[in-house]
Length: 213
Image 1 (cartoon, rainbow, N blue to C red):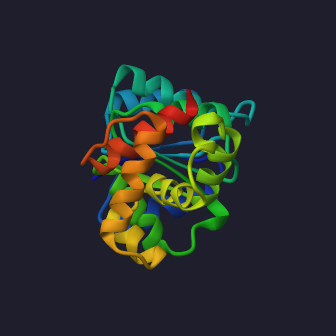
Image 2 (cartoon, one colour; image 1 turned 90 degrees about the horizontal axis):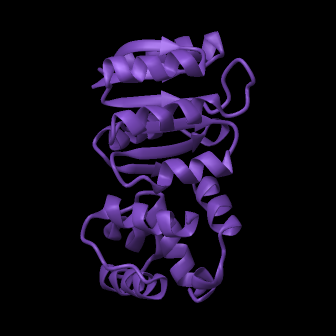
């Protein structure tokens, strides 16, 4: 898999290159600013981009804005955000785009190398990889009338769906049957006015798109 990395800290950037290379990824370019990131994404059209949010020159949201801009020209370009911050506005915009894999991990909450590598591969395959804290912040900020209709268990299931977990994984996490999970998911879609879908990635993106509207 071909990867573009955007990280302004030299040591971390080099560490990501070495780590991903060791797991058979091909790092086609590593950049340290938003302008070069956008150029690299459109030139290489990588299988996945690993992007920090805050890049030079302003260290605000250049990484996310560059990724969103590139996805506008290359629909479906997979992007995994790896940051210390949850940038609400642009995170919602990125996650609302149902084309291609997306992910948002917090640097200080990635527990293991295997977890990170799995997230990169999942996003490259068109899936979703979300840190539970990111999900929590997005849901809390967008807790409008439709989500108030959800039961506490349904909100818990919704959060696990947004992390990219399958029905089987959700059932194991909550110690319930897969059938029970399916019932909760159907209730969630009904209450949010969204049609059920067998596509795990599309259903999560649909829910997030609704919450971000």
